[in-house]
Length: 415
Figure 1 (cartoon, rainbow, N blue to C red):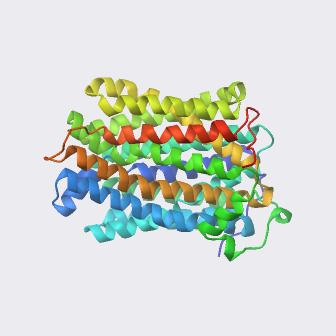
Figure 2: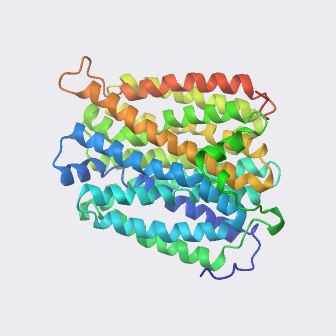
């Protein structure tokens, strides 16, 4: 039984910090496995790098399938029963998941751990709904930027743990993450108040608590269909970093685990700076539409460069600048949130979480297949960066949808 919520106001700094810390911990769970994945899978399976890449895609896809199924369910539960309960349960399950992966000695137990992790990933959607609850006016975009910044920090800490602690064994980072998750749970239990007013809640509807039902409900909001389509294309393209980076840098530059972890850490630090420091001023100066398009153009340019780049040093130098393209996602989240009523913020964030999951299902299968085709011994052209070329192409229709359906003032248009 979950104890009653504490009395501090949801707008105070401490609860906000706990919510942001929750996002950091969840992002660590995604990123901690990236630098150790190739070695972990080759140790468990006795496989080649190309074969390990395919299994890595399977594990990420398994994570995404449960995230896809659970995102709207968790979002609707938080709309009906409040955000605090959902956060606490998710943190408890997340901690158990880290223990499962720390104990994994075969591929099936590791797969089970990733399935559990996908279910707990919905806590980020609930955290975003919490931030929407406590935001007023223009604060919403800034707070979504902070959520993305904290995801970037987790993206830093996860790979850093994976790279630095790997010397104690490829499972050591998961034990560390389990302890951090326990600390986060105790903090939330102690200081996190409920953010959703009782009068703003709505009855739980099973028809809207599944991905298709929630997506239909969100699509009925004026003009949201093209924005959601652009959001999905954007995510499919952006997930190429997590899916391919460790394999790409080994194949193209011969990087070892430590250097892979360092490069991901550099990217994560830059991402946190972009979202926490640069996003707010850029959003206010450029407006929602131009912010989204600017980020997508930046991504397209860097994806094209990574497709053909030959220098590992130049790639490492270029890495922090690629994070500039991440201004698109919080801007799209803010536009979508402004179109949703107060009693459907959790549901909307659940839909966005499900779109994240769809991208994580499609991207690993698509990008690892492209990588294998262009790195196999009989490859028609040896091009480890080919998946980045595919991501560049995906940005183009996403930009067209934004240009056609999001006017300069930032509200989505009908159609």
